[in-house]
Length: 509
Image 1 (cartoon, rainbow, N blue to C red):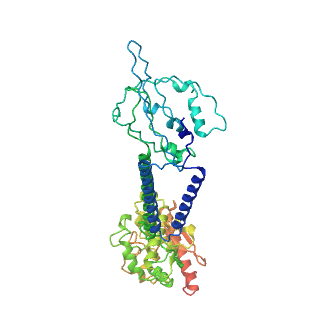
Image 2 (image 1 turned 60 degrees about the horizontal axis):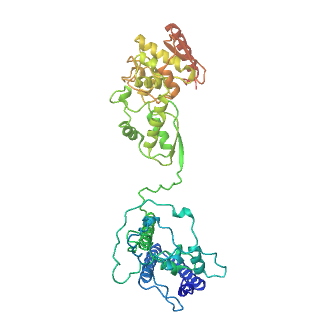
Image 3 (image 1 turned 45 degrees about the vertical axis):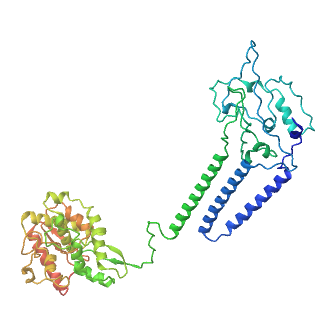
C-alpha cells in the first residue's frame, strides 16, 4: 500500500455525513409540511408530481456529476489512479508455459472490498507474497483491509468453475494510453458507512482471460437501471394518485350510476274493512267513507282489463262482482280507490281461492266462476257458518234434479238489493236472469262477494239429499230447517210466515 493510499481520508467523514443527513431530513420535513398545508386534492396531486420530478432531476444531476468529475479529497491529495496490471512476460524458449487460470464469468467473480479495488494489482512475474499477519488494533481502516486482503482465503472460495469461452474486449487498450475503467455507481443506501467515495471509485471486476489480464468493459452499472426504476415507480405512484383523485371527484359529483335510495316519507295509512257478502255498490260506499279518491265502479272496469274473468269460466260481459274479496286492507289515506280494488283481487281473492279444493266441483261440471256464483248465494242465505255446506248440497241437488233454485237472495239482488223488506209475490215474477224462481240453474253471475268459508263450501258440499230449507222462527242469527220432503217444507214455511206476521212482518234479526 502506498503512502498516499494509507493517508487517504474519506471526504464524507462522520461529521459531514451527519450534517448532510440532517440537511436532507430538514428538506423532507419542509416539503411534508407544504403538502399537508395544501387545501385541495388537485394541489396535492400537483405537489406529488413536482416532488417526483425534482427528485428525479436531482438524482440525474448527482449521477452525472459523479460520472464526469468526482470531487477530490478535502486535503487536496489526489486519490490513487487506477492501474492495470502489466502483461505477463513471454515464456523463454524451451520452458513450459505457465498454466492459465480458467476464465470466469462476470457473475462468478468474487466480491472485492474497497481496499482491494484501490490497491495496485500484483505483477504477474512477482513471487507469491507470504500470508499477512493480523494487523494491530491501532492500524487504519485501509491498512486493515489491505492486510485482510493479503491473508489466505478459504479453499471453498477457489472451487473450480466451469470454463466459459473468452469474451472479446469491448474496446482495445493494447496501444496508446491506458484507459481507466469506469467507476461503479453504487446507490448510497448500499454503500458501507464512511466509504462512499471508495465505492464510487471501484473499477469493474477484473479477472484472467485469454489475454492474460482482463480488459475493462464498458460500464453496465446499475445506476441507469436504478434511475429508470425510480422513475417508473414515481410515475406509477402519480398515476395511482390521479386515478384515486378522479374516482373521488366522480363520487362527490354523483357520477355513480346507482340511483340514490328514495327518502322514506312518513306515510299515514288507514284500515278499510270490507264485510263478507257485500255487493260492489255497497263496497263503493265503504271506500268513500274511508276517504279514498275516485269512482269505485270505474276502477273495477279498469282492473277488469288485467284480471281476466273469462279464464275462470265467466262470460265475456262478466264483471268483477264476486271476486272483490272481503277483508281488512291497509291503504294510504286519500289514496286512489283503484289501490283498494287491486288489493282485493291480488292480495285477497287469488291467495284465498288457491286454498279451495275444486275436485268435487269439477266432477259436478262446475267451473271456478260457477263456484264463486254458488258461494255468493250461500253468503247471502247463511248466517251460521256451519250451515254453508248444507245449503251448497241443496243447490247441487236441485240443479242435478233440474229444479229451479228458488233462492230469495237472487231476486233481492235483481230488484236492487232489497234486504230490509219482505218480498212481494210480484217480485218473484220479475224478468231477470238473476230470478232463480223463473229461470232454472245458476244465475248469470255472482250476487255478492263471498269469503273463504263460503267458497270452500261451494266447491265441497255435504253429501246430503236435502232439497229444501226454511228459516226457523225466532232464531237470531237465523238458522234453517233442512228437508228433502216437499210437505215438510210447506209446513215449515207456514210456521215461518205466521211468526213473521205476528212480529209485524219483520225478519228475525
